[in-house]
Length: 304
Image 1 (cartoon, rainbow, N blue to C red):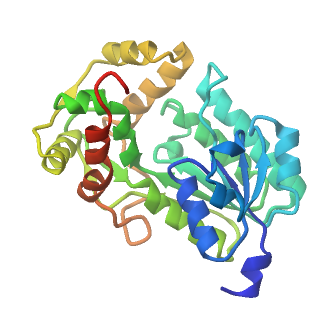
Image 2 (cartoon, rainbow, N blue to C red; image 1 turned 30 degrees about the horizontal axis):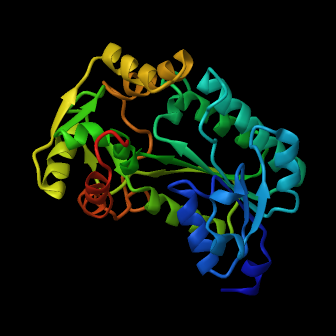
């Protein structure tokens, strides 16, 4: 660790998320004292609060974001989940505009943005279109920006515990459509490395995980990992909408999620090719043994 690293002000948003929590842990282990922005500081572990600068901030409040990032050298920006905006694309775009304003007004030299595979389409990828708006807003600042276009998170499977316990992996995606799957912890390692290094200009780096997988292959991998048969089952878009509606999502949120599977299946091919810079090590099998098996065992039916 060089003295320059200890003096660098690194700001991290969504520090309790699957990616952000890994970023924070690595920054602490690297000897930095990061500034963490979140709505509810009590969600942070006390040991982390003692080793970081914690600022209570709603990322939807542009003035608060600008104040909290004053003096920052580096920023890890995640558009937070859209719980207020009925239109997730507009919500993400609004958050992105707040980030861009902070970068511009505070002269933040480097920003790492958690984007997604599909943002390169710019239009027609459901709520990912909102991440594309954030990419454009950050690029317009002229500052150094790295857009991490990530694949489908392993952790999304934790939202299907009830069905998986019954041996079913439901999905609106075509069962034979290969796509990038990635462990959020691996993304966090890339983020931390970039925040601790020196670079400039605006560029893109995909994070594709170890291999592309179809949902049929995913079901087979999960079955072996949890020791029971799991079959992938494609559900109609209408059934998918019904399930999302029963979970309390608004019409705009539902269409944003449905639009992702519609826009990124079929003939879609990610712009960023798989290679040494885009491939990460953790396999779905390893992740499922470590995280999915305990989740299925420890969460009784009716308590999900």
